Structure formats: structure tokens, C-alpha cells
Picture (cartoon, rainbow, N blue to C red):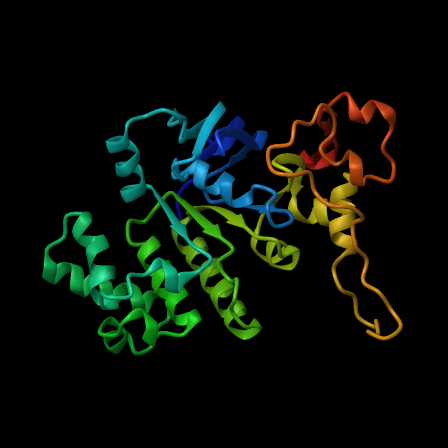
Length: 321
């Protein structure tokens, strides 16, 4: 396992991202700041559309054409990579940063056999065709694919969702990355396969010491996988801290609302109702003068509409707005 240092593997400083829609730049990340230490797993949670995946893609400088970084900086191992050239960022993605996508089948080329796609990763790292083949076989065995040789000969459509996700994880770990970004890696998998994939990620993280950015809307998954968690709402980080601290002692009204929405045992569908958070999130790119959660907050004051709340430092590295 890698030695843990005090320098973060990834650090976002007041990062702002906008998407250009119909000629207008619409802000989707509103000055988020977070850091991930070597060997640490950091979870980013929130409702769909809150900016979780955008934060992940921005961290890799992999935004779509209509996306742009409008403010703040991204630092990888202490180096500002916000505006480095294409060749340099491509080198980072090849050797230092990897990503596991939420739809593994879509992430694989349907016209090329699995073995060729895995081997291509090793060939990009300078290995010969024969070496790449052997390393590909070892990589699939590493992620607990029993019949690895047969899987190398298959096409993506011949794989189950769980098997395809294992292949993607094997490809992501081929370069022994210092940062692994997981964007909802268990979406669409059944509960048993989800547990197997999460156990695999946990074991490989312990083996390699890789820093992990884990994107999810599932607080249960975050609880079991992450050392620290950040809660994102409408593109703003509203609470952050050690996972157990945040989930057991939530401070921001949005975090409290999220936790109350988790189904509990003993409820009956005909007589009980699940808790919900009233209202809807602000529209994409909305200009917000004050707190991003003000329209849905039961304890909002008049000042919340005009002044953005600052972070308040709580115990044990826990902070909330």
C-alpha cells in the first residue's frame, strides 16, 4: 500500500463549471472545494442533477464540449492542472487517473472483443502485443473473473452487467492509478452483484492504496465505502466530513432531509408514506444570491435569500453551511 502523505492526491479549490445552453453559460458547480488524500476514499452524494458527475469529469478535465471551467483550480498531487495542454492531461489520464463509468456496457466498444480492448490499455503503456495479452488475462483474474480466457474472446453484449463492470475496473486499474474515479459504479446492478463489485473495489483499494472519488446517490453504499463524504446540492457543497460523523450527526437541513428519505423497516405501503423533501431543486444555471437550499428549507430566514452561508467548522473535521 502506498505511503500516505500530507499532500492531497486531488484538490478542488473554489471550482466553478458552466454548461453553454442556447448561447448562455449556465453555472452547474458553484465554487466547490474539497481534497482527497492518498489512500483515502471520498464520497460525493446528492440528488440526480446536483453536479456530482460534473465534478468528477471536471476533476479529470473531461468535460463535454459545451462545458467549461469558469473559476477556481484543480490540483493533482500539488500541481495545478486546470489549464495544462491536451498532451499533458492525456498523459495523466493514461498513467495516473482512471475512471469507472456507471454504464459499463456503453463504456466498451460493441464491435471489438473484450481481450483486444483490455490489451489496448497495456499497449498504450508501452507493452508488446504478447505482454499485453498476458497482462490482460492476469487483470481479469485479479478482478475475480473465473473464466478469464473465455471472457477475453467475448464481445461486450455477451457479458452480464456485473461482468462488464469487472472488466471496466480491470482496465481502470491497469496503469496502477493514483486516483480512481467511480461514477455510480453499481447503477443497474442487482443487490447481490452490487455487493460483489463493492467488495472487489474495497479489496483492490486496500491492495493498491489508490485514492478514490466515489460518486453516488446511495448513502448506504457511501457509508460502507468511504472515509469522508461531501453533500452536494444544486452545484454547491453544503456539508462535508468523516462519513460516520456526517451520517450520524447531519447538520445541514438538506443532509437531514436526505437521511429521512431512506426507507425504514416496519412501514406498510398502504398505511405509511416515505418522507420527502418538499419542493424542487433550482433550475439549471439559476442565479442564486443566497443559500442554494432556501426555497426548500423549513428553517430559512430572510437573510438566507440574500447572503450565502459560510461553512461552520464542527467537530472532527466536520463542517456545514
